[in-house]
Length: 88
Image (cartoon, rainbow, N blue to C red; front, side, top):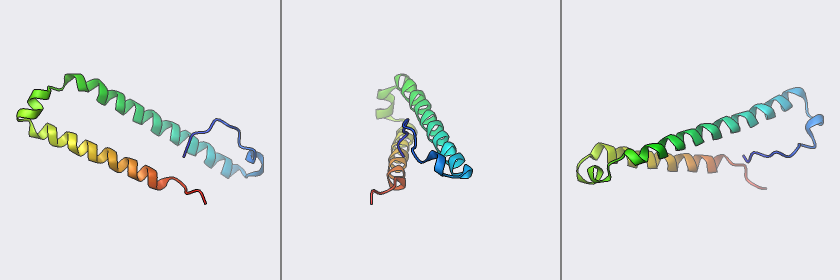
């Protein structure tokens, strides 16, 4: 779902529950985007404190954690793509 700032021309034709659902869905999109941006900022802020030499020479748990985080990110991208409505 793409966050759109345009006004919905059919807003007045729908019932109160449909309008409420639409507002809640938009709020959810904004909250999820804000959480994702915060998480990304926290991860990028920690990158400077990672010792690359230590990762390459023996800290296997950190390397495995990084790989699992990459897998989780890829899965989230796939799930997000699957949830998008198709243009029929």
